[in-house]
Length: 207
Ligand SMILES: [Zn+2]
Ligand SMILES: [Zn+2]
Image 1 (tube, rainbow, N blue to C red):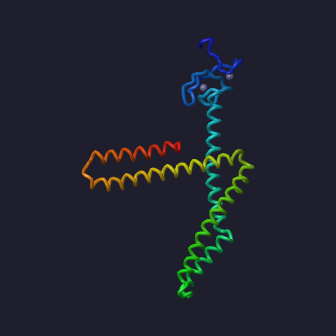
Image 2 (tube, rainbow, N blue to C red):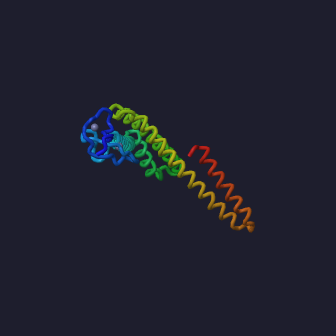
């Protein structure tokens, strides 16, 4: 063996037992039995361990974020205010024919009740989310920040999908309108303009 071949760890004089196969790329450093893990040198092994740990934390945080939303939904559904509004609206709707000429007015009140119930539910849900996030933040470092970013990412995705769908619908509608026009050139110009508009909108929102 070549005399220059030494363990890559500075000052280590242990006999070399192999050459690193690299983690996410080439490495080629030599390692001793003490400063290696499998076929990886100490640096690559710790890099791999750090990545695995980061991935595990990320998975745990994503699962926790999903659990927070689920729990908040369940808690909000069970709030007294929400249940009272829903039950009250349903009961009122069922007995509304008994009000005779005022039946439609009563139905209107039910609609308002349903609207308030939905608003109430959403308010409660948000409140429960912040409570749960604050709770998890105590045991999981920076969870609140993670949750905010995760939520923003989800909203952004929903927005992108929404815009894409809106763009497709607009294109389809335009295609229908344009098909009755003989001028093919104008049609494709409209297409291009609309496509550009959708692209611009996406770009403007930084998506
Ligand atoms: Zn060594
Ligand atoms: Zn290595």
